[in-house]
Length: 149
Image 1: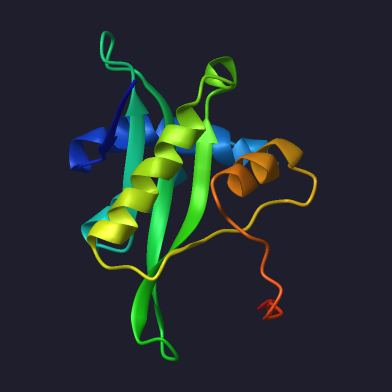
Image 2 (image 1 turned 90 degrees about the vertical axis):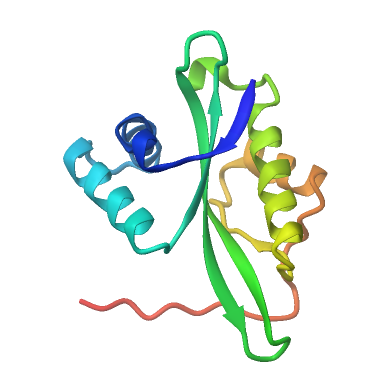
């Protein structure tokens, strides 16, 4: 399995995975919207996407997307690992772990403070993987969210 940073030429293929990812979280399919969203993030340098690609076929089987954020307290950049998805038929093959390792490597290479992520409390498989990869559940700060209506 080849893990690499995505480029603009990969957007159409990533959009298909991104759409499946959104459907996993009970969103309606919207390939056009997915493509537009990813193009916008890439054109404006607002996210970093890593893809898992089968070397023989060039098919994409997974991706992760990082969003840079900054901490005033530490005066460092961090990355939010916002999206991680592997096609159902390719799960349990270590691909998610490879994507996480690439994200960690990227954060270190660019002197990031670390990676932050959220997942559903019901996604036990993901939670187990994150904990095995050294992610710890936040206990120092509470997270609040204001929803615009």
